[in-house]
Image (cartoon, rainbow, N blue to C red):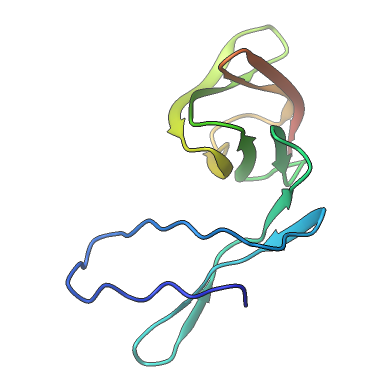
Length: 136
């Protein structure tokens, strides 16, 4: 455990929080554990952070069946556009987000896409990154 964020009993809405690891490793893995009042625990997906890289872009699982998780690490807060492009060059999915500096994860549902090979394209600030995405 690297830290605890107390529950805000006055606010029943979704909460956001930030926590800085004072001693991260070169490749650090993080998970958020939410503990309910009755003691039940729920775990987030595992997030990987490469603390030596200011900007990072990756996707998993690949090949993907239903949800692709796009990890983007930003040096500063940015407007990010993520698009999926088919082999004919047509944009078949697009989403825009404003993300804070640090590690971020976007979920993209690809259930409606037919099986095949796509290009996952992310654009922010002066960065353009592409990754081949296989829909199974």
